[in-house]
Length: 180
Image: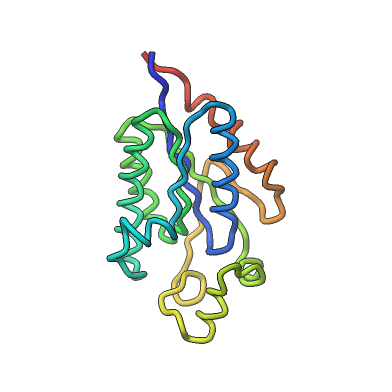
């Protein structure tokens, strides 16, 4: 019997809390003895995806590469936690298909923080820069964000991080059952 990995895919606008909750999830899983790795969009863009821009085609390619990296992590028995804006529903569907074709469980988690709240938070000053014309192709300002139609979990913007992590972990046990 071998442990089955999984892919937890966070989607939502910049500043919605994807990385914050993903980091907390990775720490909680690791402290419970479950290997987990966070694949953060900003980090992927500094390396694996540094040649990509922010057009919809480049974003889809960014997601495809992240999905393949997540599959490799999941195939080791670890939980791959991916935190990407992932603005386009059809590209997210392709990611889901890639992961499930690799016979790994896929959990889509939508950080449903509204644009106004993301702009209020603006931890990196990106919305301010986009509104000032310093950034092009910024999701939520210049490009649309398509919320998921049927994510496995929806996280409210006011949801406590520990509560959100507990809800995600609660959704994982059936997905992480041991297989022969």
